[in-house]
Length: 128
Image (cartoon, rainbow, N blue to C red; front, side, top):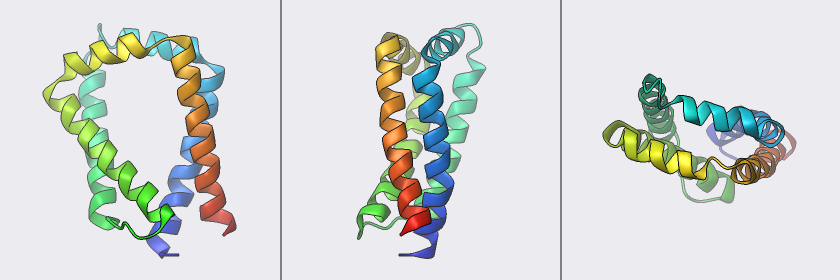
């Protein structure tokens, strides 16, 4: 496997797993966090800058589409970059969508998704 792919799997996998467990076990906290963005919109701006920076970094270093692990990493890079752009140009629209999706069951479902993806990425990065 490409060394950059392995590195990014080892970096993103544990973070995704930890975030997934946190989403799964603390959905009320994340509901309140999303609601607080209305009072403190600077959070959307910071999220936009972070998503664009991380996404573009992945794209510039790892825009590979051959193997399944490469596709996962590259796709995450593009998703983050595009998310950052949308947040920069449409912060209120993104906030309204996030607020509608901020139900406890949707947050738990997102947590389960990240637990599965994070575990898979850890397995690929550390054990294959």
